[in-house]
Length: 79
Image (tube, rainbow, N blue to C red; front, side, top):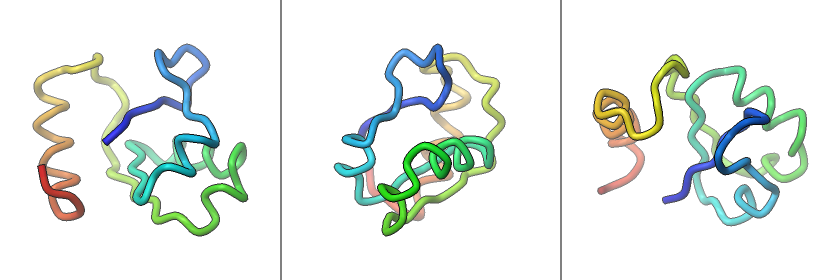
């Protein structure tokens, strides 16, 4: 599992390489999906992208966010 952001100030910004590597892509909000679609349209064309509808208002490694993420992606991946 890897993580990358769509914001200009993201610690690790998503690249075409990240998308190519991924079997499954999760985004927290619809705006993140729109950004990926705009910048990497060809790369995500045949990828499964799941929007978790989690407000992007948490700090990096926030324990509440980790709980929400684990519960949200649990239907798709095993930890």
